[in-house]
Structure formats: C-alpha cells, structure tokens
Length: 141
Image (tube, rainbow, N blue to C red; front, side, top):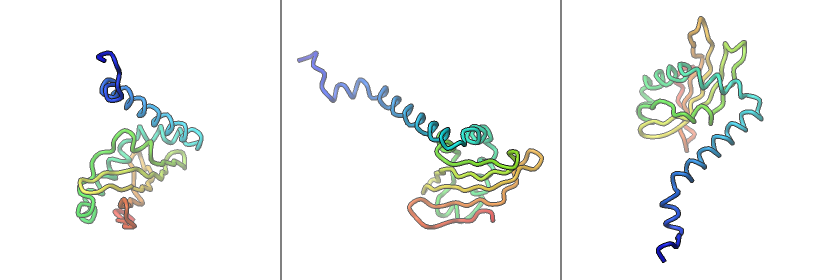
C-alpha cells in the first residue's frame, strides 16, 4: 500500500511541475498568436518600451475617478503586455496599445494612443475600461 500512487499523492508531488508546464503552454500560445497576427515585432518592442506604460499608469493614478473606482493601479506584470495588443506605425513614432490593468479595488483594460517626440511619449488618449462593466474613464482625450 505504501508504494501506491494515489491521485492526491501525485498532485502533491508534481503540482509545481504541472503549473510550470501550463504557464509555458500559455506563453507559447500567446507567442504563436502574436506571430500569426504579424505583430511579433510590435509586441517585442512594446515589451522593451516600459516607459510607454508606466507613464500612462502614472497619469491614470493621478485621476480621481480612476482611484475612486479601481483604486491605485499597480505596475504591469510580465504577461499583461503580451496578452494585450500593441500596434506601432509611422516609423515606430506612433502607437496604439491595450493592456490589462489591476487596481487595488477592480481590474480593467487601458487603451493608449501616443506619439513619440524626441524620445518622449506624448499621450493623445488614455482610456480606462472597467472589467465587467460598460464604464469608461477618459484619463486623457
């Protein structure tokens, strides 16, 4: 009986391996989707262009309505950009991006439209959409 592997014992021994495998499969599927959609280069650039997102989050966190409804928005986790959508144009000087965000109270998505002027992003639009709601907060129009 001691050598019998029950389903519960298997899970206790292998859960870390199983969760890691699922994370790898999910990341692979997201990467495959990005490649097939033809925006792998945009995704790679977006992943390296962290100021685009951190500055937009800073502006959102200065908006009273965002703080009241979502709470303070935290930094993006590693998959938020990959799960989102990013499209560069005009020799990478224009961007439209959507990323998942998490506030202390609620979650949502942030849409960003910006132009790069002398290595600085000038935001034309920052919009926060509240998850499980039709509510939209225009941080920058």
